[in-house]
Image 1 (cartoon, helix red, strand yellow):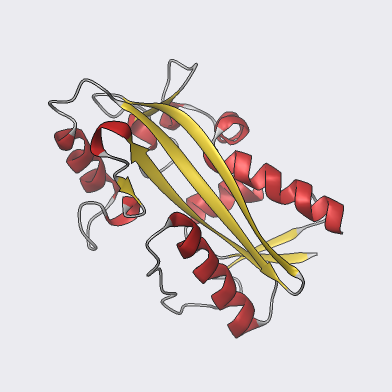
Image 2 (cartoon, rainbow, N blue to C red):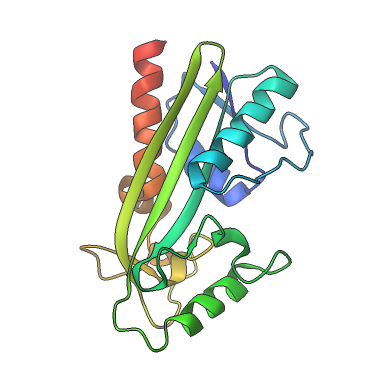
Length: 192
């Protein structure tokens, strides 16, 4: 089965591809030559995931899933949430996002947070959402050079290292995205 993962992010694509069984051929937006600026205008993580998956299905006639992920920090009332990728502004990068987050937490004692990933599957006869959550806390200084995004400052519950210190396999087994992908695969295996 050929399935599009609606992303150009090669870090994210490799992470998800490593979790896919051999009977699913995973391709990215780059692979199908989709360079459109797919709108992410929803006000929720669920809505943005659905927008991306539906766009690819409607414009390329291919079964697709898309994810949207947000880091929800308790002391910041769930921010950055749906705005995680552009927290420091639309033209900024992961380092700027982390710097802004750490600055906003400087006077906060509660550093609890969670990553939330929602995967939307869009195909003929299949419209489903799958949610994965990984709870943890925001540490004070970035550590590690694996992963991407907020990984260097997020320490999952029950661990003494950040996502950025973990191997791709180790992170995949406990991460929000790994949990959502596991639910997607369970659904696909029952459907196929």
